[in-house]
Image 1 (tube, one colour):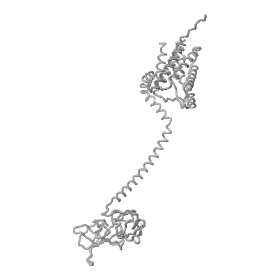
Image 2 (tube, chains in turn cyan, red; image 1 turned 180 degrees about the vertical axis):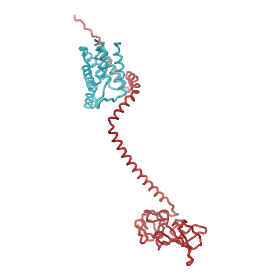
Image 3 (cartoon, chains in turn cyan, blue; image 1 turned 90 degrees about the vertical axis):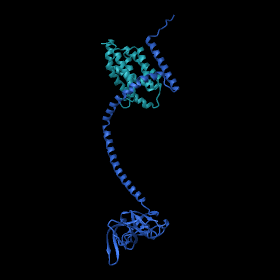
Image 4 (tube, chains in turn cyan, purple; image 1 turned 45 degrees about the vertical axis):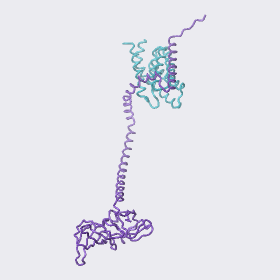
Length: 160
Length: 268
């Protein structure tokens, strides 16, 4: 099997996640929270690659999210770069993460990214946004589990 | 001498990424200040928006399908509400059509002939079958005078007999005490008087030996100061000659019947 298959697969999924942001802007998978598959995939790939590469994935993710949504691009980029970099550093210490651990790690990081974004650019309705963010974190953990199931096979085999 | 510590490649990439992020954010802010869109955002949108918009129906279709299943009960309730509203609307439409017909009927009556006089609309306030009189809602204040004709339902109904300031009384043409100059428009015309025989029948007495066919319309002759010529009085049902008295008679059914009208007009 081609070891680069994981990267190709991730690239396709990452691009599709960007398209999903346009195709389904209000795409709440559960009431009250909006999933962010682009962020989840970015953080997930950060657990598989070196911190420098993770930072670039974070940058690209921030540019795409900011460009599509018209949000604060600097805030999105900085929060995602920092999170992806930190997550990559954590994951490098323990390469034997199983799917659940990796999913929870990514979901938590996604939650931290959202909280960071709230701190960088505070919204008007803080309480409501925070409630939606918590709900979205649960959705993102579930998403992360699904994505991990697909990607871990390729990357973990390659590592070991 | 202190050894200079070199940055690791990961740290360099991190710093570069952070600087680029800050730079892009700055560029976005400046572009927004100029009321335009920065090139990076424009490029991202050029790549993602067309393809993403194309995908939207594929995403929204199934989403709507599952939302529809979830809200089936609500949809059923809405359909019941719509059915109720539709039934109510049909009742309303029937009612409205009835009102429209009434309106058109009234309008048609309003637009009836005035026989060269002013039509004064009046309401029939009282009807006395025993005396064969009606009391009307206009009087001398509106220019009503004794002898003026009252028309309704396309024919002569009564003749004004008493007038006060705000009301007047009129004797129906079916009253035996009432006689009206009448004519049958033939050549030569048959001229005579119509008087009441009963509430359903009138008698037309004339002198010229003219053959009058059943169904002919007898109208007012106009040989009166107040009642103009040509107002229909009734339809001939039969005619006969009374040689002993030397007069000719025809029996009529009155055109205007008091029991089916509520409004009338006085020809002033």
